[in-house]
Image (cartoon, rainbow, N blue to C red; front, top):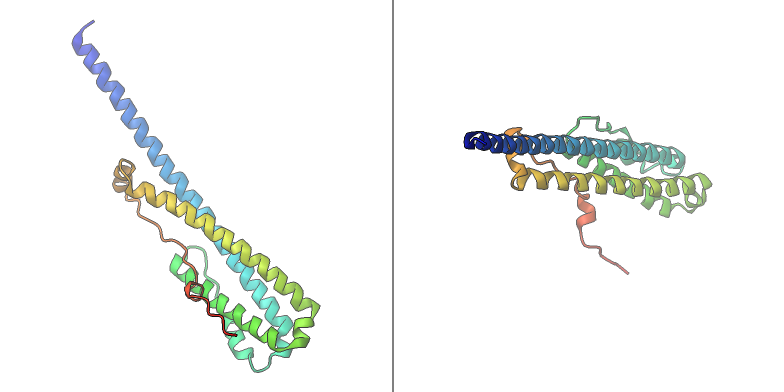
Length: 186
């Protein structure tokens, strides 16, 4: 066999391997971006559920809370972050809703009749379920972002990432109030 022919076959084989790796890596990035978008959509759904739950809880409780109404109405009246909103806007919305839920819980503790209301108890239990769902959605999103970000910065996949201008994505962070140390005041 001709040595030039063998060299050409080896070069062709290497080229096929490199092209296959490039296409596979590019498809992997695209799949990860779809997973990130899907998990971000789950956060949007959970935030919407949380907003709706807060609104229903407020409606059920507002007869008992005349002097707190202004603060709570401001929280309920906030616009919901839409699809395509940056993660920082969704983060701010989540933080504001969390503060609203804390206000309602404080009011519920202050009014025994309200605490005993079956509607409010049911809504509080549903709120807990929505919060757990939101936390799960955040964990899935952050896990997907972590895997993607690792591929963006680690060699050799970062070569494809740089060529196609894939950039790191932002994590969904915990609310600032939840990062603080818990103080027990007896």
